[in-house]
Image 1 (cartoon, helix red, strand yellow):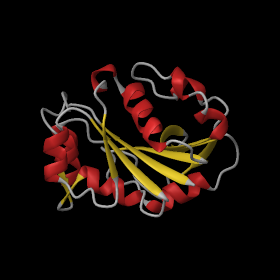
Image 2 (cartoon, rainbow, N blue to C red):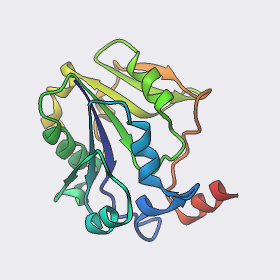
Image 3 (cartoon, one colour):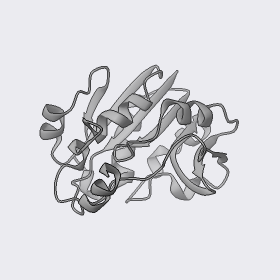
Image 4 (spheres, one colour):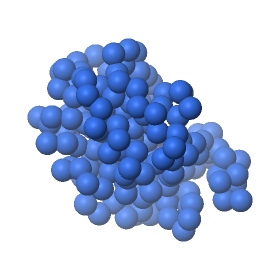
Amino acid sequence: MSTGILLAAGEGRRFGGSKQLARVGGRPLIEHALAALGDLDRRIVVLGARAAEVQAGADLSGAEVVVCADWPEGMGASLRSGLEAAGDTDEVVVMLADQPFLTAAVVARVRAAQGPAARATFAGAPGHPVVLRRALLARAGELHGDRGFRGRLDEATEVECGDLADPRDIDTRADLEVVRL
């Protein structure tokens, strides 16, 4: 079984509000990212700050919503919440809600890679999605702070995806304005 975990728990401090709901191409950022996880067996959206606002403002149909009470601790806490909700699964595809230009083709290419983990790269720079398989999933209890599995991905197969998508994320309102031009 394959499970997608979409991390969307942050408060959007640098953005100045719920960046998950910022619109690109007429849809909230979170909906773009959720669409890229479309063909997986399960899709889990991890919310935290402004959870009710995000649920009310975005179409999260077909996804299981998990609210991470420990979201202020960082990405590790959010990922831990998503992994707990995923339970026994063969692989997890981790994506971020603020990358609206990643597509299902990127997810498929990274999932096709072999090994205990795989991660997308864009012009050689590591990014998302990240695929975690059983060997690494068993170590989820080690996640702390804002690093997620970052320190444990040394053995990840790197999969170049720069020909498929723009990996930029939207962290500030200025970032949003650039992609709207």
